[in-house]
Length: 232
Image 1 (cartoon, rainbow, N blue to C red):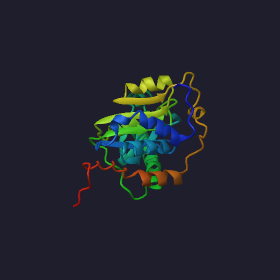
Image 2 (image 1 turned 90 degrees about the vertical axis):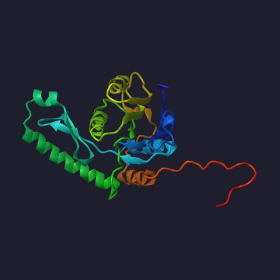
Image 3 (image 1 turned 120 degrees about the vertical axis):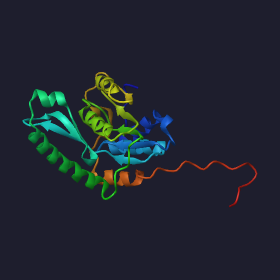
Image 4 (image 1 turned 135 degrees about the vertical axis):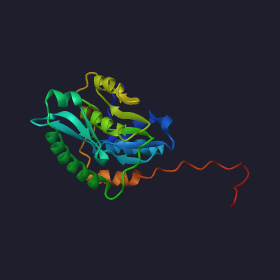
């Protein structure tokens, strides 16, 4: 399947969902999607598994003067995770960390409000969380998400993506309980190379999918005994 090209993110999500069939109709499963491109993928996964869908917004904390280098991450509820080796190596003062965290927390909250509105985030403590994106190149954003999510106390973290660089998939496998990478092309190049339509997902689409996926589709009712239906 390494040559797989998806028509769009929704198709990729449907294909990915088939790899996660064992999580279908389980009351302890929550699907969290990384915005924005991960949301259409996550929507199809959540729909197929009949699990609730929410967005998981994370922000990397960049080293002052080297913002591309992450010294940590923050997640929903103000959860903060620091990479102590980076902080110690660059001798980053606490004040600088706090200032960066305040800036990124403000942006995180702005994005959560834009995507979710007044709805509270889904509870994840003690749950099996399937963390979804549209693909993994370097995996830096997903690593930040995993670190922030871990601090919220899920019982199990499953990273699921339609396509990923083989090395990134292998590295992340050591950081989570399970990883499902449907396709791992080598050479990888870029995530968008494996989609016919990789146009930007809009905020409006994110809001609509989250609103629709918040409550999972109930499982079909079991058929009654042959010979007639039962009244109440």
